[in-house]
Length: 252
Image (cartoon, rainbow, N blue to C red; front, side):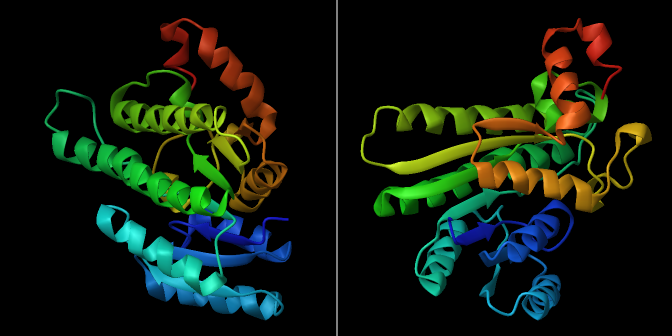
């Protein structure tokens, strides 16, 4: 088992949900986020429920790209190395392109892609040094196709993250003697703080507990990629890839 896992933006939502499931499975955790008070509350909760594990908290704003490397190094030192990094940071701000929402769209693009790039760089440097590791990148089912309106930049940034992960995976094909895996997850509608104010199809929404349990199941299997939860998002994601754009825009 890959014992020591770092999760970015673990203070709430999907990050906190994954932390709870991983802790219950006996994983040591390095939890990062800007809101350290929430991390400390989660740390206390996890240690009370799972006293045999180690949980550390680390303040991190992924938009401060340079700090990502120092925080990952500090977490690695605290745990004697990192076996897995879950690149979970994401932002959902934005508006229709060409309607004066550039600042919000730029913020989303910078957090979701440039921030993820910094996290992947820091994680892979550590894994190459150890010759072992598991990089998990959280994309979105919206990455399957171009999305309309306020989803356009978010979906594009999540598609970029998915391609980033695939590029890293491609590099690993030519490097021998390494136990390094890369997983890309495409969550569907899973309840979280980020989407609680977004109008989405409620019939397809699952609660955080159910959604993050599905995510952790695929993480621990170290799959190449997966839409989660598998039902209904595995078939929906396949339809999204092939359907006319006029149909896709009505699906998400």
